[in-house]
Each structure stands twice: as structure tokens, then as C-alpha cells.
Image (cartoon, rainbow, N blue to C red; front, side, top):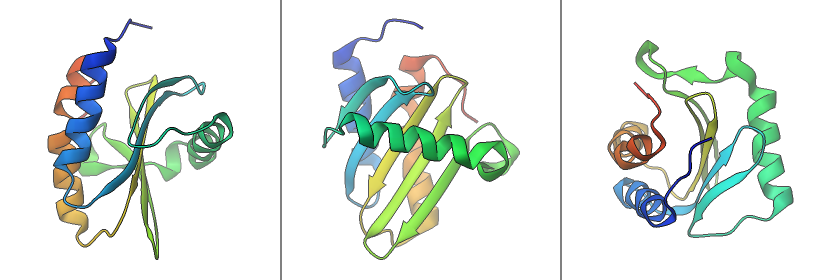
Length: 128
């Protein structure tokens, strides 16, 4: 796995959070094997990270939707107090966003697409 500049990663996660049309509670970037690469707004403990990775594994490929038939695979879980958006970035990374008060799914995904630009460039992954 490539070495990632911490300052650039922090900027990319903050940029993603700021691009959202609703308030982000936390942003976590982990590898599919559970290694924490970066976190923003809230630090998750090991058991929380393990739960995020396990949830993504349990969802599997068939439950991860592909937006517009492309490689942007995600799972969105919504509840009364907000949502969790989990995205596979390439074959190595998993991005987990905890979001409050989603008012528009179109606006949410538009913000995510715009906000991912610095992160996918930094990671060198392709997300279409």
C-alpha cells in the first residue's frame, strides 16, 4: 500500500465533509482489512472500526449498489437520527460517513461526488 501524506489526507477528508449538503458527524477511511488510514471529526475506537468493516463485508458485492452502472459502490443506511454512507474506494479502501439530517439524496450524492475529488486523487483510485 502506498504511503499517504497525513496533511493531504486530513485536507481531503475535511473537503469531503464540507462538500456535503448536511452536517457530517464523522468520516473514517479504513482498509478492507480494518487498518485505520484517517479519521475526521470523531475518532472511532477499534471495535467501531471493526464493526464498520464487518458490516461492509456482510453487505458483500450484491448489496453494494453501483451508481450509474459505474465503479462507485456504496451502501446507505438511514434512520431517524441520520444516515451512514459506506463506500468502497477501489479494491483497498472503505470510506464511512456518518451524516445528520439528510434532506435530499440527490444533493447528498452530488456533494459526495464533488467532495471525493481530492481524496480519490490522493489515494490514486478510480471511482466513476
